Amino acid sequence: MVADKSKKLKVADKGENVEEIDGELVLSIEKLQEIQDELEKINEEASDEVLEVEQKYNEIRKPVYDKRNEIIKSIPDFWTTAFLSHPALGELLNEEDQKIFKYLSSLEVEDFKDVKSGYSITFNFNPNPYFEDTKLTKTYTFLEEGTTKITATPIKWKEGKGIPNGVHEKKGNKRAPTDISFFSWFSDTEQKDEMDDMHDEGKDEDDSEDDDDQEDDDDEGEEDDGK
Image (cartoon, rainbow, N blue to C red; front, side):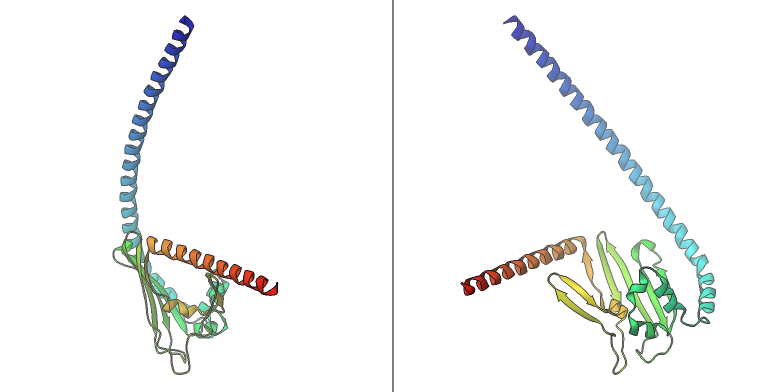
């Protein structure tokens, strides 16, 4: 009996130590979170100041960019060559796009005055036999956290012209491009947030499962017919 009492006391003492350690751990985590919140506040302030500096130097760079654009205009097929030489952008231009890009005179990326609100990308074209527009612009506007509004210039194609080979083939829940035109990018406008993307992904998965189930049912039906 004496031995049993001694054992219980040790267990009780051990339990008290565990409770004491847990209390200290919770306190440490709370202090750590306070410091983390303080760091995030400083990081936000630093980010705002960095954006202000970036905006200032964007204004300083602009006349230099303008001078560069003037020189680029004298170089034949500059933008076609630049896009095709880029490891990622080179895959965006099909053969017909390359013909249209011969008329591209300059490309501009412009941030809004409030840099965090969004930016626009403008393609300036010389008069050409493909469309009436001399400027094609795509704009990204950040409305609130997780939400982006996308707008673009609707291209006014000349008679007999249109998005060159801009064909999409749907296979299962994926869209396989068939020589998709770069200019279809200007018709891809939407407003989505993270929840919309999650919903679309879930819907695609459900559609894929339904297609698989249908295929299984068809296979079973064929087997039954063959019996």
